[in-house]
Each structure stands twice: as structure tokens, then as C-alpha cells.
Length: 486
Ligand SMILES: Cc1cc2nc3c(=O)[nH]c(=O)nc-3n(C[C@H](O)[C@H](O)[C@H](O)COP(=O)(O)OP(=O)(O)OC[C@H]3O[C@@H](n4cnc5c(N)ncnc54)[C@H](O)[C@@H]3O)c2cc1C
Image 1 (cartoon, rainbow, N blue to C red):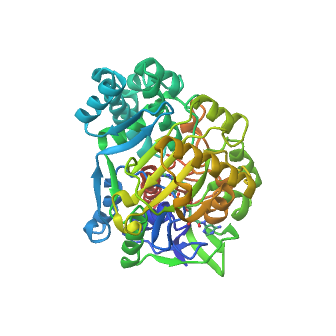
Image 2 (cartoon, protein in one colour):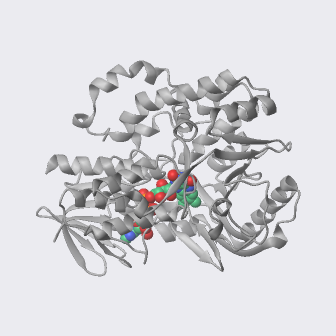
Image 3 (cartoon, helix red, strand yellow):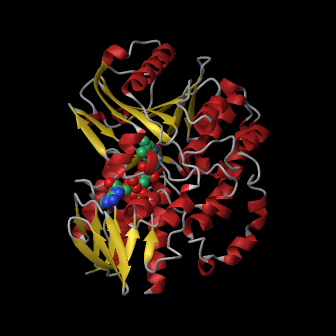
């Protein structure tokens, strides 16, 4: 019998296991795959290494904190460094903008290429920091669905910033009003996609996201993103967290104060932590139709179509993170969220970790992670995949003015359906529910169950949200909730 069983060995499951272990709990993590990581996995194909999911890394201190808990030096497990260019943007008219995190370089870039006054960008990023400090911190660190957990004094003192945060306008409206330059607006609209949402609908409060990248810094691990979860797994093993792989949980029940969890065999635990998509959990494991239907009414965030291409040449025009914007950004989101179809002109994101970690590709070659946003649940037949691939290549060859198709040495593809099979994310939605409503942040699934005793939720589909930093915050919140009842 365990104090806690955690379902899912993604980043959230491992981070929560570490925190509970530190409090002396006897913890077991059950994972359906043969490896840790979930969305944060890696592929090795003929000398090319690809991170499967996340590529943007901010707030490394949240990872390092887990090592500090156990008195360990994180650098013995993984290493990273700061990167001075958060993204390289390519516009359809041929203009290219480097978004430097160094403020002087950024201001020079924007004033010389866009004729934008330095003060406007400075002000935007200052407001972004203020919103994050006043609202973000409290929101991200609190089980907001439990009144006794809310730091009311801090909430009340920050109410003026909250009401001035752009909450009731869309991110696009806020950006258009404050930035007054179409290209800058498009760049800052893109932050809504960091939680799989539509900048023309999501609240302007998301304008606090650039603070993390542009003010707090953009980082990248020397061993790729996978080294983050690999290091934490090693830390967990070293400190006695138990893992069992190839265990698909099919059922669980609560009886006389204990959970019975059915996988390859039956396990018992006092506390159960769901570290998988909460919708899959209600549908396939707890089989609670009522709760499934309640949360299934919420619109899903975007999914992705990802091409992993080993390119057998170097393309100097590209950096670590690159965006090739669509011509009509508003139409792209209408296609995704209103029509539920693949955008006819998608924005293309390319991440190339071998730009920094040369070992990730053979000499004079590059490992391209090429992603477009698509609706969750969209079915992609081979013919449609081929059509999108041809469109993406045509766009890239034109923008970079160089042949690419003939240089694809290896290829692997991740579709919404495969994302669902591989990670359990319902319909392949990357971040659970979308944040397309003004109060979406408040209606995300809580970190605890109001119906079932000793049942907790962490990970990218529940409060406070998806992405590496927020997933780590969810582990922190669950740990505190469990500590409070013990
Ligand atoms: C293509 C893509 C790009 C992304 N880009 C970024 C980015 O740039 N930056 C960023 O911060 N975030 C990004 N994300 C989001 C980020 O990857 C996730 O928010 C985060 O990794 C989620 O971690 P998790 O532990 O909550 O869930 P997961 O990683 O999904 O882990 C869940 C685990 O549970 C297991 N599981 C599921 N069902 C069962 C079951 N029935 N029984 C047993 N085990 C089960 C799964 O196999 C999996 O290992 C991206 C995600 C994707 C897919």
C-alpha cells in the first residue's frame, strides 16, 4: 500500500512525486509508456536527436528548486544556458526580425527595421512585468478553487492592477491599442498560442506571458529539453520514488478511505494524483460521466502537426526558434477555432536545437522540429498530411530562397491522433481547455476533487495551465494541498 500513487510519468507526475517524497511519503508513479516524459519525449533517428514537444524553456529556477529540495546541485543532472534571441520572425513581405532578450539590441532592431519608438516596447514589457508580479504570481501559486488557500490580502491590494490588466479586452485589441504597429501586434499576439488559444478571443491578461521570455529570460538545456525530465527522473530514483512502466491504468475506485488502482495488477493508495489529461482520467479511468461531460463542454486548446526533419545541410538564416508568419493571422485562428479545419495558410514554427547543441545532428546537418497549430481532434489522412507538407516546404523554400525538400534525410510525423495515443491527451489537445474566454483561467479544472476525497490533479490540463513552468507550479500546489490535510 502506498501513501500516494501518481498516474503519469510526465513532467508533472515526476515533479509531484519528488515533492511528496521529500515530505516522507511512500510514492509510486504508474506510466503506460516504457519511458518517462510524456509530451516531453525524444526521438533518435540516424544520428539526429529530436525533442518531441516543448522547445521553449523559461523559468529554469522552477526545475532547479526540485534539486535544491534534496540538497543536490542541478548541474550534476542537467545544464542549461541563457539564449539572447527568444525568436526569429519571418514575415511574408520578406522582412526578418530578431527578438533579442537584451533590451538595447531589441530596441535597435525594432527601431531600425520597424521604425518603432523604443519607449513603446519598453512600456509594454514593463506592464507585462507588473501584471505578472501583481496577478500572475498569486494566481500561479495558489489553489484558487479553495477559498482558504487564497491570499486575500495580496489579492485585494493588487485589484487595481487586475482591473487595468486588459482582462476584458482581447489580447489582439490590447496589443493593437498599445503597440500600434501591425508586425509588433502579430508578434505579441502569438503569445496566446503558448496555451493553445486564439489571440482574437483570449483575454488581454495573457500579455503577461512575454515577461517570462523577454524580461526573465529565454534558456536552453545543453542536452536538449529531454534532459530536463531525464534529470528529474534520475533525482527521483536516487531518492526512492518508485516507478512502474508499461502500466496502463484502466480503472480506479475509492472504498473505505483507500484508492484501488487497476493496471497490470491492482495497487492501493491513500492518495491518488492524476497527472494525465483530466478528461481522459474521467472518461477512461474513473469513468465518471457527469464530471467528464462537465469539463468536456470546455473548448479544447489547439493540437499540432509536427514534422521532425533531419536536414543534411546548414541553413544559416535560421536560429534556435523561428516563426514564419501567415499572411492573415486572424483568418488562421478562424480556420482553427471556428471552422475546426487545418489553416489554409498556417504559421510555421521551426525549432533547431542543433544550432546550439551540435551533437543533435550529424556534422553539417540540422534537426528541424517543424510545427503548425491545428484543431484538436482533427483527423489527418496521409493525403492531407502530404498536402500540408508540400505547402510548408513551398513556403519555406520561397522564404529562405534555398531548396529544402531534397535535403530531408530523415522524417517522422506527429499528428493529433498520435499525440492522443502516445500521451493520453484527449483529441491531442496540447494544453487541455483553451483560454479563449475572458475568465477561462478561473474555470480550468482545480488541483483537487470536490467530489472524491484525497484525489488531486496536476499537469498541463489543470490549474494553473500548460507549459513547463505552469506544470511545475501545479506540482507545487498539489504538494501544498496534500501537506495541509496531513
Ligand atoms: C508539440 C508540443 C509542443 C509544445 N511546446 C511547448 C513549449 O515550447 N514550451 C512549453 O513550456 N510547453 C510546451 N508544450 C506543452 C508541454 O509539453 C506540456 O504542458 C507538458 O509537458 C505537460 O506535462 P504533463 O506531465 O502535464 O503531461 P504529459 O507530458 O502529457 O504526461 C502524461 C503522462 O501520463 C501518461 N499516461 C496517460 N494516460 C495514462 C494511463 N491511462 N495510464 C498510465 N499512464 C498514462 C502518458 O503516457 C504521459 O507519459 C508542448 C507540447 C507539445 C505536444
